[in-house]
Image 1 (cartoon, rainbow, N blue to C red):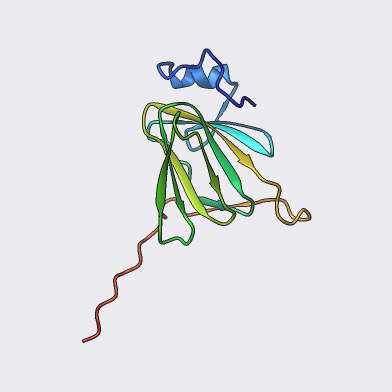
Image 2 (tube, one colour):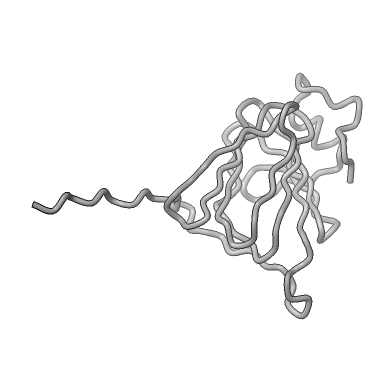
Length: 147
């Protein structure tokens, strides 16, 4: 898998042309991906595509490769959330194990590579847990002051 985008992949290219150039397969959720290597996957998100909220038993590194900036949102506890923009100025972010996260493009499309660290316990491969489609981190309610 490429560490940098091929030279002929420019932000003005159509998303389907990028997917074809990289031999990516359309996922049921609408985005394109290549998962030939269990240690990493190449993902192409189009406008309106959202990676389902998930958390993994292994650490991940998200690397922005091309296209529009990508919004990566993480929630370590299912309540607090923080978003990062990955683009040419900040190309990568590390997601610790068991941290909820999702990603979406901020433009027509974004190309990224997700690398998976080896599972902490080598006897058990890394696994992912996916949230319900309507789930997102919910802020805790504010506490009323005691009177």
